[in-house]
Amino acid sequence: MKPRTPEITSASRPLTYEVEALNENGEAVATPIAGEHPLTLYIDKREVVTLMTLGQAPEALVIGYLRNQRLVRGIEDIAAVQVDWETDSVAVTTRKGVKGLAKKMQKRTVTTGCGQGTVFGDLMEEIESIRLREDVTLEEETLYALLDAVRRHETIYKAAGAVHGCALATNEPAASRIITFIEDVGRHNAVDTIAGQMWLEDIDGSDKIFYTTGRLTSEMVIKAAQMRIPFLVSRSGLTKMGHDIASRIGITMIGRAVNKRYLLYTGKQRFVKAALRTMVA
Image 1 (cartoon, rainbow, N blue to C red):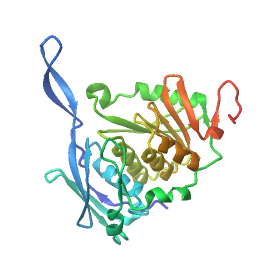
Image 2 (cartoon, helix red, strand yellow):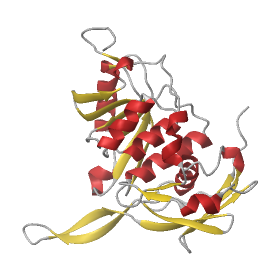
Image 3 (cartoon, one colour):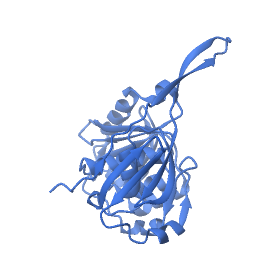
Image 4 (cartoon, one colour):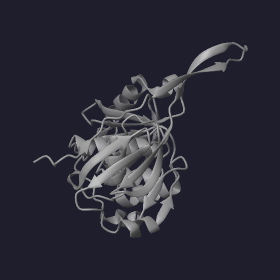
């Protein structure tokens, strides 16, 4: 049975704004720029954190944030998510409160998520409990199909730059379809928004592919694994801690993925080369 979903607002902000800039010839040109808004999160009337966001899907962002920080166990624990842009705040009401919230807030790790990522409590110590499916594979042709779909996708980045994008995609034989594509001023916000949408729409991530334009840090690896997604792809590179955690969890991590070029870093047992049609050892 689908979990009980919370009462939520629908308070998306304009994603781009037009300003005047001077080009290299000294000519005034109308130029779109990305939005950026502070959004202070309150859980049961207690201030927790301020997120800087594009405002594309703030309710899903907050739900995904609660999910990836393990502040709630399931979407059924959330009674309401109310965004108010007049006060730049979002009020979350839980059904039974957040157990140990004060203690979790005492221990924070500021991550490399564009200077704004934060991990609460003992999340870093809990990664050993994460288990991903071993009975799913990713074909090389499917990877190429995903990269082509991302390249063709209309994005805020193409119009205004200054944002990161993340996509949740299907994993089909020699094909991949983008289920949802989210952009935000920080890649951690984009992944949290997708996590929130997955809860709201009851999407199973255990056979899906997660794509990000940002680098593969420990935070990105942990969040993908918490969504039970076994395949993590980026056009960028990775960090040592991201590599270490991906190896421990067993996630299949691919970086520097552009057109038909990529580097397969971890989880090689799930990847199927097109030419060989056999599992890579």
